[in-house]
Image 1 (cartoon, rainbow, N blue to C red):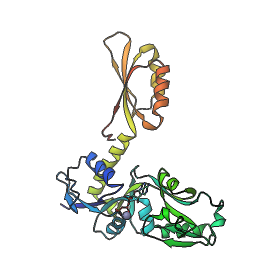
Image 2: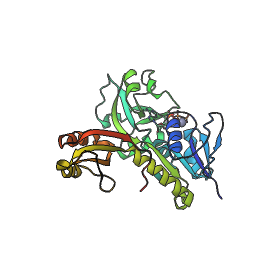
Image 3: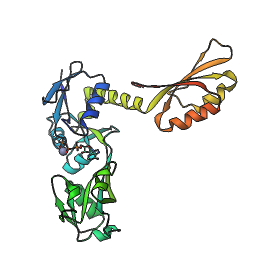
Image 4: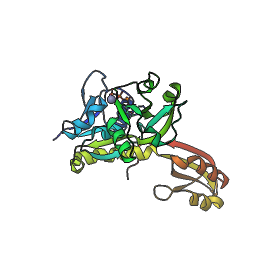
Amino acid sequence: MKTLKIAIQKSGRLNEKSVELLKNCGLSFENYKSSLISPVSNFPLEILFLRDDDIPEYVQDGIADLGIVGENVIQETEVAVSYLQRLGFGKCSLKIAVPNNNAIQHLDQLNGKAIATTYPVILGKFLKEKNIQADIRTISGSVEISPGLGLSDAICDLVSTGGTLKSNGLVPFADVMSSEAVLIGRKGSEDEELVKELIQRIQSVLRAKETKYVVLNVHTDNLSAIINLLPGVKSPSVVPLAEANWVAVHTVIPERDFWDKISQLKQAGAQGIVVMPIEKIIL
Ligand code: ATP
Ligand code: ZN
């Protein structure tokens, strides 16, 4: 049987979450920091640990069948790969930022200015689209210190909380792209059975992360009001309690409107609400 290869970041911001996702998919492997390849003992898969910048090309060239990498890196390397699944972590934005004492307020004012970045391809396309002629200075790191050193008038860099910008006296000025970690595959790999199986496992883990399992007690007089509030995978399960006219309702609730729902349920007569994490949801 064929063994798939998946490339993930060796160390850095995406490493831990990538390893966690694969482990939550039930894959058993050693996470040796020193090795390049780790075999999975219970699935025909090998994990390649690489620098994130190399992952898109490895997948495009078929050295790895799959990869987990930020969309920003894929766009910058301009590879031909299939986007298989957004993964919901590694969220950040590529932004243009300017010194906070700078008079730049409109994109037009970037004309003729120097912008330092490690993302010349993405920035170049953005400026072209906006019809702005600026001087893109490609540097390999520590972009945020370049205006202070007099190397550029602005920067274009990844931002998540904005803390690094702030501590360097910079303010975000324009959004170039937003990014998150994605699963990519060699073109055509999405039709292979093993790849489909792995995507299904990943989706069941992601679905579970977005939902909570909730058990609550309610008097039968209030049951229909409670059921009307609940989405559930299908309809909720209703289990009789030892006390007459009381039932326990079991259901799942999406994380995003969780607190709203809980307060609505309480108002509708729910008591003893227990909330539990879900490991997997297989549809
Ligand atoms: P490598 O050594 O693998 O080349 P790196 O230094 O290029 O690592 P990291 O800083 O570990 O990369 O970031 C990896 C990815 O994490 C980025 O490409 C991006 O998709 C994502 N990311 C999320 N938040 C941030 C952030 N605040 N700054 C930079 N990257 C972020
Ligand atoms: Zn990198």
